[in-house]
Amino acid sequence: MKVFIVCISLIIAIPVSGQGVSSGNDMELRKLFIGVTSAGYFANKNTANFYNGFESGGISRVLNTQVYKDQITQQLIYDWTFGQFPEEMKYSVALQLGVHLGYHVSENFALIADVDVINLKVKDFVTFYIDDPNNGSPEPTIETMPILGEEKRLNINFGFQNYLSDENNTFFYWSMALNVSSTKFVNNTMKVRQNTYYIGDPLWVGNVNAFTGAVVNENGRTKPGGIGFGGVAGIGVKFKFNSNFIFDLGYNLNYSTINLTDYQLTTKTRGVQHCLFVRILRG
Image (cartoon, rainbow, N blue to C red; front, side, top):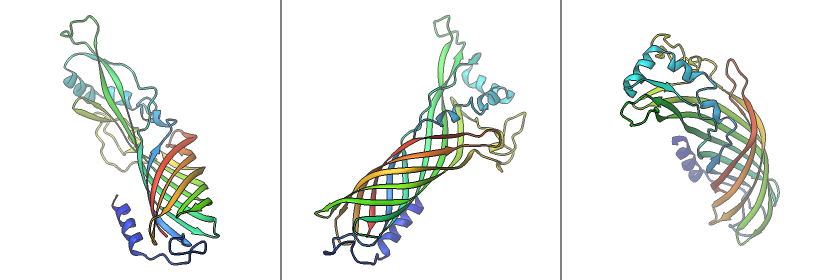
């Protein structure tokens, strides 16, 4: 967020030189434009189950570590058994922030580049069966516990915009770009009432004490993540509201490869992500 604020300050402070892309007054688009992007990022669910605690074996590790079992029993009070893993986890809509740069090579055509950062979260629930004698039923009490996954994505796009029309300082366009997506695992946890447990592979965070489950150090190796390639197609409209600034509103369809490969398994999925964005541009 601090980097985003710094980018806004620089865009306001740095003058954008160059003549307009078509003959006219100061309300025409200039050759060079630069700005900041704020967007809603709708990730597909293809990699969401990576965080369900089953894929990494993380929940089994927690439940088979004696100190954790004792803590869970202390929290739940009565005897318990583990129930079910979530099967259809989904990412929440994420905030995407970035920088957008472009250069008009002709009146209707511009080269563009984007660098965007997305912090993604996925949340669901696992179940525990608790033998509570006070529940008034011969069946155990079913209690759900939250499970959370977090990852970061860096999207870099190189492409073009083609203007369809421009009237009354309003410019409609379509765009296409090549996409590079860098994905990085951040965290994976399960909460049992007041206690939170790390359920990723211990090798992702460093050395783990086999008796207590505590992380000895955080010099993790081979955290899941990697680079993937894809493409972007989009539409948008620009409003030139004064001689220096442009309001840009649009939609991008991103066909990307998400890479969560770790030291043991190769995890790559391809699919469509959606993005609704607004930009403030200097140009």
